[in-house]
Image (tube, rainbow, N blue to C red):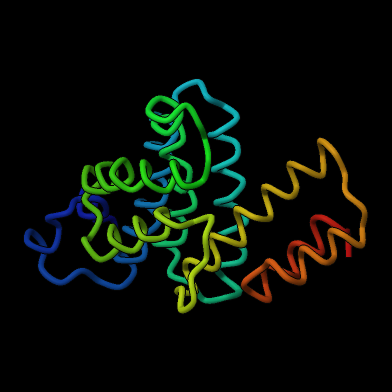
Length: 193
């Protein structure tokens, strides 16, 4: 069944009543795709940042399936996790994590509001972005998935530029990843095991 604009419209429930489960799933997929488009629009010609966010999102999708995270939250946060990096550079002259974590949430919120995301999703995505380099005790599985995905991509980028010793990398994987699926994927991607 084709629901046309009801698949993406924030007022669909008011027009057509309760939405069937297949349409709700379609709305989440559309949100993910629309967030990716908005991230690309925001970064414009900064292909390095676009590529990084896209790779983090791909890892997040794979880890998220295994860890049973909320795909809408995980993928929106993965695409937008570094959205504050340009503002950090402009305001603070630095891309340091704390500046990204301060500048990112307001930008992410404006994007998600524009896309008609639910308030609970916006709040969780912004919370993840606000400390995506600094895990806290009691973080949600969605945070852990995004954290592991970003860590995996950052380590992969570093390995390509300046490889570190296998034992050192094994130690980082064992100690730093927050999910079992993240550790497994890191071993696969970084160590080929």
